[in-house]
Length: 339
Image (cartoon, rainbow, N blue to C red; front, side, top):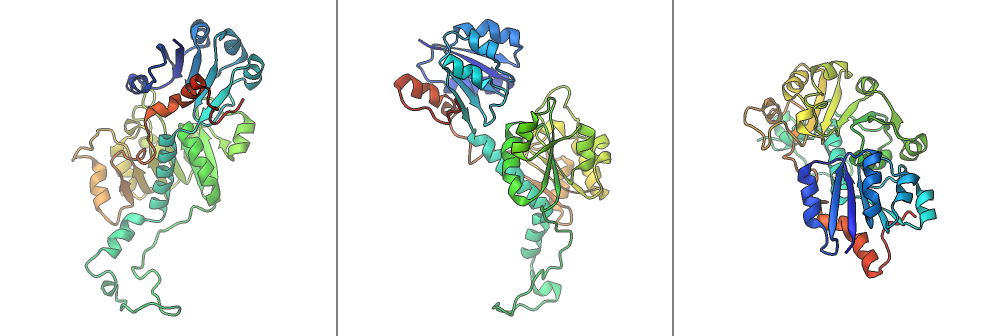
């Protein structure tokens, strides 16, 4: 029976979900979280399959040490950190897998950006008011090519994404899928991660690296995609908001506990930030005393909150991650083959 080595940076909860979704054909799964190269070299000789999820470089030495290796499966759409030449020489196929749930979060992130730039919250409040037309002194008329009432609610502060600078902190697979889609909007895209991408990958994605400080200061829209950890707990708070441009926006699809929600509410109330959209929160389900709830209920405040649903619509069964292993075992063509 074959064995699988699963490299990941994700928590035990995610590892357990992946383990439960594995096909019965796999005899053993060994998970290594944020492994060193030495740890991978110890484990790889007994592996028939290698799955890599956000877990760093797979170089020629690792591939050559995998004497039984029959497949390298990357969960995600970037393979720049896998030595494709070494895999080709060893006769080991390499495949990528754009994760449906990741794509869904990227789509939600873009919706959040547009929602705050277009002030969708107070626009909805205006049209649902008791007198959406006549209440503003504009009589209602049947529209045709000459009769229509543009901006009858006299709304202001609506902005376009065209020409704006969007910065992503915590740039991983969600960030990759987001910037690929944001390119169509004509915005400038910056990112920060612990290890910058190779320049040829940046050029292919249309993004530029910045330090954390530069990213905060230069972004019109700051997108947080940071995971939770001791170093990120409450990281985006008063000091970060002070460095952000007046009139800029915060969008959060990363860990809720990365955001200091009290400091965010203060930055919004002061007018320093023009809006915020969050899908995750420090306490979930959200607590009634969360200071952002009052702002979200106030149509004059540009705050959009969703109940940790960004992944919905794309999150399929995690068994999809093993599809190429199943295909290889039954002799079917591999999907998304890179090598």
